[in-house]
Length: 135
Image (cartoon, rainbow, N blue to C red; front, top):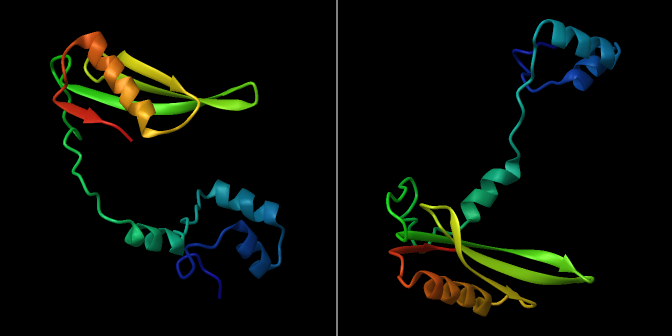
């Protein structure tokens, strides 16, 4: 006997196949009676999380927001397509003011890109932040 209590993950396709009726009819009835099968979690998701190594450094700025400028700078980079090539852009932003304090462009994605952007930030502001968060 087919019941949703014993098979809560059955969707409209499996129910229609088991009952020998059309999928559209089953979808219409499931919508009418607000029956939603639960979505199964992928068995690979758990394994992927178990293989992920622990973070080497703690995230010290998680959950806390600075109340003064130049305490926390965050960095990110992106790539821009230009003339069928990529140009990489790295920016540093003050987390309090949300202002870009430094940036750098390069045709290569190297550590020098991030260091140049940080140096530009230091030249523009003249002070070093307490925290720097980068990818």
